[in-house]
Image 1: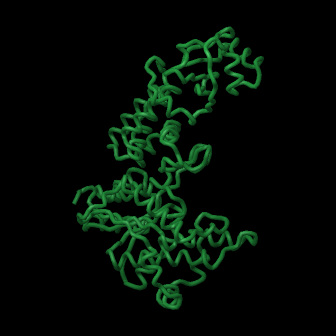
Image 2: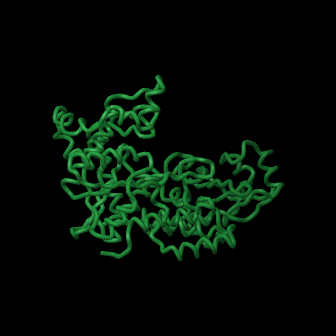
Image 3: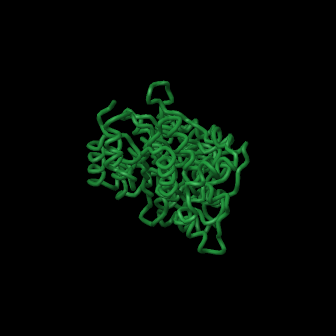
Length: 425
């Protein structure tokens, strides 16, 4: 077994917010191979950037010689976790849950090794054991260990009870008991002594710890990962379009790469520690070099490559990095690759026009919708704020044959950050 203690490693890297019994858990890791689990909600067909924190918790567990269990909540997903929610989630059908589970399995394999070694990762579906529970059996063998006072003491339950417009259903209230049952089942069946989860899961995790103690007389542990916020108070992992997903069907590799390119300087050290396996000395070196010349965004570039390579593969990461350089780097458009321009198509505002040589840039800008009028286009051109394929153009400029990269692409930049791709066709 690797001598590094996972609890100490995770704590040092900022991945532990709260723990039920930190000293005892650290001792447990030092004495045996520990099985720990994280539950994943199958309410969507893709995990997102926020899910990568608990995934990293499982991945570190495995790297350091312990066994990770990934529990996809096919059973609890039919109910919906009310934690952190102000109203009841829409209930999914069984077929929707099964489809989402298959997608999540595939994404987890990017981080975990599902081999047959003693600490090989295991994916389980809690529907497999919850479906056989009768209501009477569940009430007699599990629910009797929890008082109503205990359940309503949970913050997310209390907040809903205190607001008559929100309320909470019996179905949602039962979620806590089902998650506790999961932990007990995994303890009995897989010797699982640890549950990890988001900070909003603390109450649910404690319910499982209590159930194991009351039913088995055993000691189990739980810890939570911190909730990451941006400097504006927004939950980390969100973009203007919403959540940043791991699936390329929901968030394109280019947008995924750009999300990491836009990470705030002050968050870099923390994010490198939480989201990557890089040695801490290497992280300190990257951040130190970046802070000496933050305008180069070298740390963001390294972060974007690291994360995009892991999720989408190194080849795709290199392609989107090239496309990104066209917009945000000191780029020589004579080195442009058609593949990079193809990636940008649709990622930035794009227009298709029947471009002709000799046509004025003013007319192209209006036809493409870059400017609402010729007067506005001329004003921008006269002010020197219009660039075509990286070169500043003036008011009298006409379109020349060499302006169409690969005979079909013309990239306009207005000011410093506004881009528009014009495609012939």
